[in-house]
Amino acid sequence: MDEIVTIFTRVWTDITGGAHAPLSFRLIIQPLVAAFFAIRTGIQDAQAGRPLFFWAVVLSDPARRRELLREGWEHVGKVFIAAVIADAIYQLIVHHWVYPSEALIVATILAVLPYLAIRGLVNRVLRHRRSGKGVTQA
Image 1 (cartoon, helix red, strand yellow):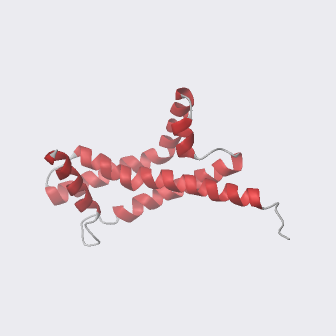
Image 2 (spheres, one colour):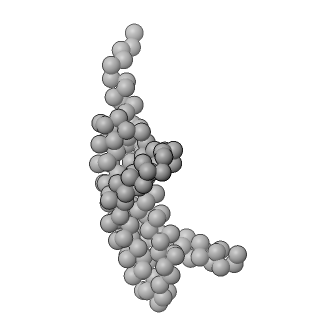
């Protein structure tokens, strides 16, 4: 249990290291790139009338889920890999060692979570706007 706490403590410290930390730009760039792909895909989802991506993955049948995950990975995979590499470099500079599980956790936080949240938000906002356009108020 202490090892898990140590891992998450180190992850939290690495993420919240501040602007003075080496490679701190990764804390801004990676979520922004993930957001770019998420916005673009969220717009396409809304135009096609598709449901929210995360819920579609969770609630769909296994064959459809695999297809959705493959599509999502095509969009966020490069950002995720770049996040893993950047975090590994950061760990080498700061800790003089690479902790692969921590790099995966940080990459998930910096790339995958923003992608899922923003893609769903964009889809929901645009679908809500579209459904409200034909409504007139008295």
